Image (cartoon, rainbow, N blue to C red; front, side):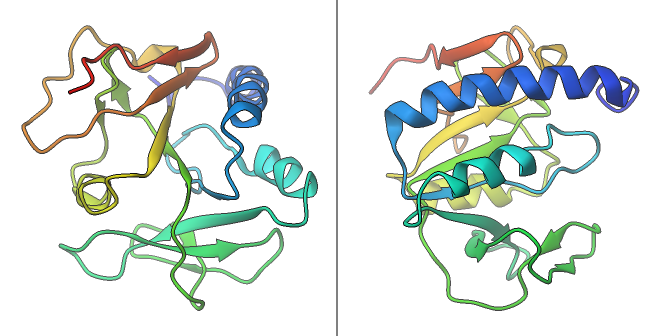
Length: 177
């Protein structure tokens, strides 16, 4: 459904998401913020990240990089206009640079539930990354059309801390244990 939604409608939703991101990120005040290049009509956060970076010289944006099939992602610094290469799925990433640890990660949601669990594309990259970076705060970013009653998480899945859609900011409704 997301890919069939007209780009003009997604642009309206993305603007609403950007406003919600402004509010949450102002509260959380990360120094290093990870985000994902838009893939298959996911929310395009690049304009928002550009504005966020312009808000302070100490701010750093990072993109995830797949270094091995069964390994956690690493994050590398991203700057608007920098040279990127494409991975096997056609997703751009910084080919060089030190690995950096983000304070906050904006994670795309294909499908999600109110407890903060998400479905990705099945490669397990974010599952392994979140397991390795247990202290990383996460914000799932998606459109309401991806909301489900239950995505049937597996034992290794980690819920997002917050969800943001065009309808608002939602703390994950999972028990903190």
